Structures are given as structure tokens and as C-alpha cells.
Amino acid sequence: MPLPGSAAFRLDQAEQDCRDLEAISDLLRKTAGSITPIIQRLTYGTLPLAVKESCIMLEALAEEIERDDVATVQEAAAL
Image 1 (cartoon, helix red, strand yellow):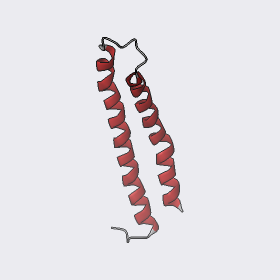
Image 2 (cartoon, rainbow, N blue to C red; image 1 turned 90 degrees about the horizontal axis):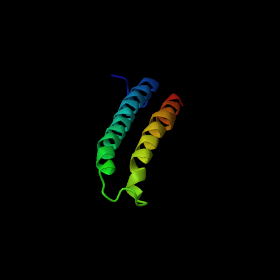
Image 3 (cartoon, rainbow, N blue to C red; image 1 turned 30 degrees about the horizontal axis):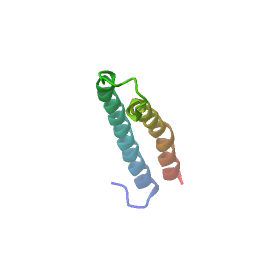
Image 4 (tube, rainbow, N blue to C red; image 1 turned 60 degrees about the vertical axis):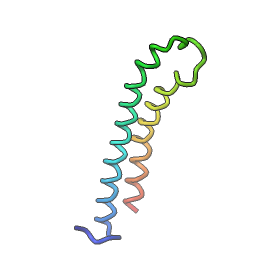
């Protein structure tokens, strides 16, 4: 077990954070996948409903987490 504050400790913590970020991203994608069929069966789905954008936004957020947040954590751990 690396000592708290050491470079090895920071890298271990960053790896855990990156795994957690991946899990969050996966959950967002699964949620988008679960919501899509519900949205598709809405009787008034042709109206300009905000919910129609939710899956797109969840997918975009998942991608941003994987790309930007993971890189930010990795960069912070390397300092």
C-alpha cells in the first residue's frame, strides 16, 4: 500500500477515480438505452418535448466524462 501523498498513492487514487468515472459513464449510457423505448412510445412524442433530448444529452455527457474527466484526473495525478 503506497503512502498517502506519495506519487504512487496519487496514481492509485487516479486509477480508482478513472474506474469510477467509467462506471458513471456506463450507467448514463444504460439509462439512455432504457429511456429511449419509453420516449418512442409517447403518444404526444411529436410535440417539442424536452425529454426527447435527454438520451442525446446523456450520451454526450458519457462521452465527455470518458474523454475529458478521465484526462483531467490523470493529469492531476501526474503533478
